[in-house]
Image (tube, rainbow, N blue to C red; front, side):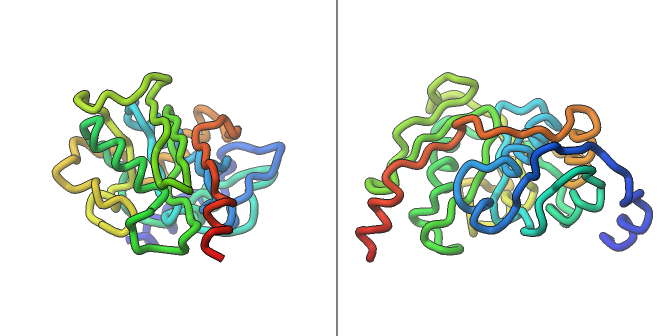
Length: 213
């Protein structure tokens, strides 16, 4: 159980330090690309050496910014769940659908303007007005709809239709450690220094919002 795991863990262990505070408020996590989302997606991808890392925004718990020393307890507070980081194998066509679901135009979950995902080793350009993906790339190359890609995700996403209904249990091919253990291992080895890199670009969001008024 989570309580037993936390009791046995060194919650006060400092896994890394950050110079610039990393925000994790709701408007940040659900607002598009953000540093904390990039950190989690990078850690997930690293755990499996996957083509893509995907973190669902709904799985990131809000709280005070990470500042100064970051402890294991801080990482558990960000993702306090027992699910492992799973590895999914999907077609390029399915991956394109998953990227579209980050904008949730057809998903009845959360607020209308929420952005639902964060990615690693991928770039997505979304037009909010037309509700279309204008660009979708992995490793700098456009997605090949007929190719297969590995995606590191929370196990939860393979059993829930709330945010990414394209993903399902049939896509699962492997699993790594519990999510917060992956975050801690990644932080120890690679550090916590995420940047905004243009992984997600949302166009015409203001125009679409104005049309709804």
